[in-house]
Image (tube, rainbow, N blue to C red; front, side, top):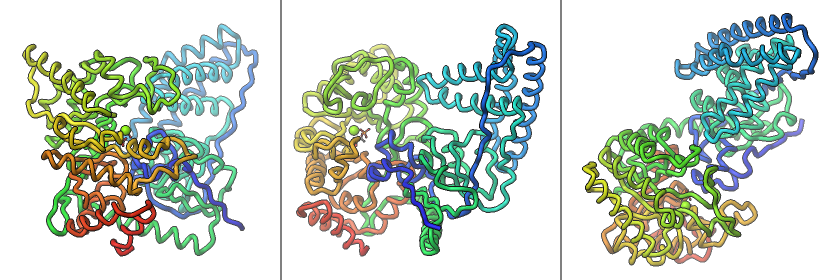
Amino acid sequence: MSSKKIKGAKKAVSFKKNADKVSSFCNDVIGDICGIISGSAGVSVAKVYKLETPKVVIEKKAGVAEEEVKKFEDALEQTKKDIEGVKERAAKRLSDEELAVFDAHLMMAGDPELAGQIKTMIENDGVNAEYATEQVANQMVEMFESMDNDYFRERAADIKDVTFRLKCNLLGLTIPDLTSIDEDSIIVAHDLTPSDTAQLNEFVKGFATEIGGKTSHSAIMANSLEIPAVVGCPGVCDACKTGDTLALDALDGVVEINPDEETIAKYEAKAVAYLKEKEELKVLKNEKSVTTDGHEVELAGNIGGFKDVEGVLTNGEGVGLFRTEFLYMDSDHFPTEDEQFEAYKQVLEGMQGKKVVVRTLDIGGDKHLSYYEFPQEMNPFLGYRAIRLCLKETDIFKTQLRALCRASVYGRLCIMFPMIATVKEFCDAKAIFEEVKAELVAEGVAVSDSIEVGMMVEIPAAAVLADQFAKYADFFSIGTNDLIQYSMAADRMSEHVSYLYQPYNPSVLRLVANTIKGAHEHGKWVGMCGAMAGEPHAVPILLGLGLDEFSMSATQILKARKVVKSLSYEEMQGLAQECLNKDTADEVLETVKTKLGE
Ligand code: PEP
Ligand code: MG
């Protein structure tokens, strides 16, 4: 038997170093690579259980309305019973919160609107129950899928799930019962529906699906069940059959079918090492991030919204980057001042007084809004985006700043502006902030007077002129995802030039060093919120360069803390100087590895 290897996540793997920056690529692997859903990282080796869902083929036929309505009602009753049954079986393993998916399904199955529309179609069009069910289901799914909101798009999966069950009952088809799995298995499927994932028992050691993304139900469920999962792995179904042996490596996004004994042993060792490290890291949760010679740094987390706060709060010392664009992207209109106020307040309160660095709107480039027309540009990454847009569309900017100022009394707020290229841009943005703050105070609204106002350093021009910027900004946060792409003139989204994405290139290191030096000369602190901050081999150099705050995805924090605690600041200062004088990225990486004894 020959072994086959599928890289489930080509993009995520080749962009591995960008970790949490590449949300659009993060669909591919669930796990530490992307730092999205840590609980589902890991490695497993087990037999394949290939989920073969029945093929539903529906023909349009003429039907006697009364008979078809009766057939539909019977199938609907059976569907409700099936869902109840699945819920009962799943209750052995899932929490009430996780079981709520079945309540939602029961509600859908009992929804008079759904049943009413199907019956009306049967009666008015004289068609068979199967056809009417399919038509109405498709319309509903289409409507939900077209919504500009992740939550509603995910609800489309629930409608598909319930109506699939309904169609199977109408056609007399049996849906496989996953609760019957009684030996260690890895499920391979085109996709897993919410009710499939809820039925996974203790014998399921992981799953690989052809489709799915980070917000897909299966990804979320894998996280809560703490099993490894690789999603978005096209071709995996055709590549294997039930009974094959499968190695599922959700750390590196690899699925290997029928590997030889030696390879199995390698994956098993990797699984053991992963679990051991996970346990070891837990101990570091409430510890300080301090080097062996007493130099303390701050390890913070990057968040996209309130849902990410818990992970950062348990592992980190603050939020180093709150990417507010998700608030705008998940909405079908510019979020109002009140909507934004609630969102910021929730995060600030959630962080319980720990520092929260909120980045003002960074839209444009590859991030678009359905309700805003961006100009057509040859190079959108170099175009009208982020602070450039906010300084032009001041109403949008002021609304966000008002909401932030109002929320500032609920925690420790720092505001930073993205894509600052010139001192004038920073000063103009800061002046608008001051104006908004004064307006609110005049209105009698409470605003904290300790809000820090800083900027992202992600354009080489700002890194080079850091000492001048530091006269005006309270702090810097280095955005290496962009800083690297602009320094190397290599589009961060292009796989063709991804070899130029070189965090360890001495030119990038010198820009980082210059930024830190410029800030420290003026007594300002410097963080880094680009993916480089969470790279275990970059941490020693950054530490030695004097970086004060490292912000990364919550799942990377404990590992970074382990690294910091194992190093001497004095030695890292020497290492950093050595790295700055190397010729190539490879030489830098080699130097770090040698120093760490790897
Ligand atoms: C960066 O550029 O490093 C950064 C953190 O911002 P984003 O990835 O959101 O552009
Ligand atoms: Mg950026």
